[in-house]
Each structure stands twice: as C-alpha cells, then as structure tokens.
Amino acid sequence: MRLDMAQIEGAIRLSHAAGQIPAVIIDVNEARWLEIAHLARSQRSRLIAMWGSEAPDGIFSANAAYECEDGILWVRLAVERGPHPGGDFPDLAAIFPYATRMQRAIFDLTGLQARGAQDTRPWLNHGNWPSDYFPLQRQASGVERFESSEADYPFVQVAGDGVHEIAVGPIHAGIIEPGHFRFSVVGEKVLRLEERLGYAHRGVERLFERTPASGCHRVAARIAGDSTVAFSWAYCMAFEQACGVAVSNRALYLRALLLERERVANHLGDLGALGNDAGFAFGLAQLSRLREDWIRMNAHAFGHRYLMDRIVPGGTAVDIRPETATALVRQCDAIEREVDVMRKIYEDQSGVQDRFAGAGRLTADVAGHFGVRGMAARASGHTFDVRAALQPAPYDNVAVKAASDPRGDVAARVAMRFTEIGESLRLIRALLASFPAGPTAIDVKPSTVPSRGTGWVEGWRGDVFVALEVDAGDVVSRCHCHDPSWQTWPALEHAIIGNIVADFPLINKSFNLNYAGHDL
Image 1 (cartoon, rainbow, N blue to C red):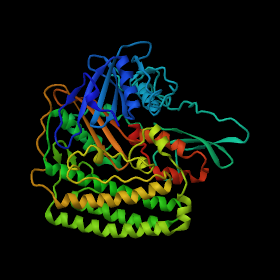
Image 2 (image 1 turned 120 degrees about the horizontal axis):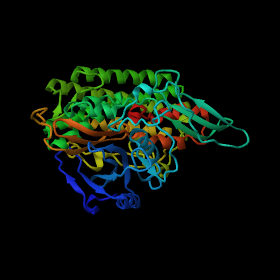
Image 3 (image 1 turned 90 degrees about the vertical axis):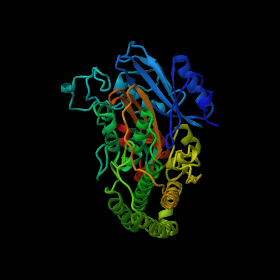
C-alpha cells in the first residue's frame, strides 16, 4: 500500500489531461515536512526526488516528490536564511537513506543545508568552485575564480589486517563517462565500494532557466543521449500540464512508440556488452548487429538514429506513414526471432552462465531500502513500472505486462532485458495496430500566469521525473530533472560486496547506470 494523495490535507491538485500523471502540490512547515516523510515511509511509499530552488523574491525552498498509488505528491518547504548560505531544512536521509546524495547536491547547488545530516561531504563541488559559489542561487557569480585542481575527497576508510584500497577512474580505458570507484579489498574480495561522481556536471538546470520554456525540450533531450525520448517526454508532459494543454491521441501513441524503440535499442546494446564482458564475443557481434539494424530503422522512419528532438511541446515533430508502420512491424517480427535465438544461446553457454549466476546480487530488501526502480528493481523481485501502475495514455489501451525476477544477480538482469525486449516488441505491434487518426502536434501557448507541472515516464533504465515551474512570458523559473540512477548508484555499492574485483566491470555493466543524467 503506497501513499494515497487523498490522505494529504491541504494539497492542491494540478490539472491533468490524458497522457499526464496526476499530481498534487502542498506547501508545508518543518513539522509537516517530516510528518509527510514518515507517513510515506510507514506506507512503503518512495521518495522520487529532492531538489532546492530560489524564487525570484529570494525565498529558498526545499522540494521533495513522493510516489503515490495515484500519482505524485510534490512537497515544498519555504526555508528561512540561517547560518548556511541558503538556510537549512530538516534532514530526510534518516528516513530515506538514499536522500543523502540528493541533499549533498542541493547544498552544492543552492547552499541549502540538510540540518542534522550525517554526511555533508561535497557531491558536485569537487573543490573547483569558490566557497561562496552556489550556481543555482540567483546572484551566483565568481566564474573567473574557479580553481583548476581537485580537492581531496574524504573516502570512508576500512581498517583491518590485509585490507588495502584499489582506486579506479575517473578516467577509464575506453569511451566511458567519468566516475571514480574506490574499492576496499582483502585479496580479491571486495569489502566495500564507494563511488565518487559529479565529474560530468554541465550546469543543465541553470541552462533551463536561460532557455524559453517552449524550447527546453531540446535541453531535456540532451541530458542523456541513451534516454533522450524519456527525458524529452517527461519535460513536455510537465510543460503541457503547466500550460493546461492536452495533446492528441495520435501524438501519445507516437510518443509511446518512440519510447519503446529507445528501450529495445538500449537493451540490445547492453546484452551484447554483457556477453562480451563474460568472454563471449559472439554475443557482442550478433546483438550489436541487431541494434544497428534497429537504430537505422529509427533514422529511416523518424529521421534520427537516437530519436532526439522527435518529441516536442504539443505532440511530436514526426508522423508515421502506413508503409512505414508495416516496415516497423516486419522488423519487430524479425528482431524477435533473432533475439529468441540469442537468448537460448546465452542460456546454453555454461561459461557465460557461470559468470552471470550469483554475481552482483541485489536483494529485494536492499533494492527497497535504496528506493531502486526500473529494470534493476524488477530483476530483484519488485514489479513497479510507471506504465503498468499509473497507466498514462496510451498505456491504458495497451496494457503493460511488468515482469520480474527474484534472483537479483547479473543473470536476472540479463533475463529481464531479454523479457523487456519481447514486451516492448509486443507493445510496438499493439500500438501500430490501433494507431488513431488526428494531428501529431498542437500549438502550445505558454501560461500567462506562474504555473507548475510534473512529468513521470518509465524510461529504459527506470522512472524519469521532471518538476517544472514556469513564469508568465515563456520563462522557466525552475526545472529539476531526475534520473533513476540517483537511487541505484548507492545500491550498486552493496551489490558488489563479497564479489571479486575482476567481476566489477560485468556487475557494473549489468546495471549500466547514468553518469551524465545523474550529474546534470
């Protein structure tokens, strides 16, 4: 039983149309802030995201979004300036442990401090920023005073006979985003892993505020190239809710079609890479071929291999012709046959299965403790999927069958990818079989008064969330985008415990978490 928005007194319901997620927003004091958090925890609800903001009048607020059984609860706490640069607010990490890094990022960006938090180490600020520089404060300045050297980071030390540390990254061998991993090991066995991220921070949230709200879908689409559809849809969903706009059924079907094609492309690529990490290069060759065929069809049907900027406010920038729909169905049939063959080959390869089975096990309890969602959680026995649980249009007409696997190891995450490819292929065929008529896009007139909206989309990695505040005149006051990797990175630290260091690349790839979408 998750939190029911109807239980929250004083909340204001945001208007929503078909294809949007119901949401309510409530302004609270500190006592209510903690009361709602405890209520959410007691009812096994989940903290989706936390972020800080500063209004044009200089008032700071701490924000939290909660997963409810009927939508999203957005809680806002006005914060008075105090001993910290932006004031402080009651710590939520004691209630939701995975709030720790979000709160550390809030301080680095806004100066808002979580009062009573145990871990207050910098997260995005690597020592390059001046001590009085907080990039999301409206009077932020001092760019010319950036430092070129990194500050030492106080990693947690593990003591004991035979314990030593192995430092990996942030620069890696190959084309990969930067991240530092500090292993504490005895022999080859991992006792502890601690991650250091934030190297890919690009100032995206400030860029939203410097871009017209009607054009920010292009910023959202570039947060993470492998999730461009999910982020741009979530942004457009929030913007359309803020503007009181309902898009056509045809546009919703097109958006879902693009989202499922993005899911399939990423799962195909990961399955090939996982085979390669287990010493099975044949799997990489074959699944890479299938992925290339898939994204070439994206270019043919929609004009972009990775589907960037295909989703726009009011609908989509592309339509689909009957002959193209036929080609897409035909490709689904062909890919499904070949993927089924590859799944049997993976299952029959004893060497591959020996590497997969038991490696990087994430139990259902640990996944729940860290609020993990998406494919990683479903591979640990959980079943939540925004498409299935909330059924936003058009998923109310093509019901999603959310699968799960209780094993929680690399083998389970591989199996979930194969299963989710099959389900996405089924959904694509179902969408194309009942494609509605109508326009692909409508004009969206920016709101003439300050307004808010939320977007929540089940991306291939998990749920992507956007909270948007717009002012009159097509101006973004604040836009916060949240990638599911925020919750899953800490869980990965636990999944590696007891494994050998040499298995980390395989375990890490089985999650394939986001650096850039996490850092913003």
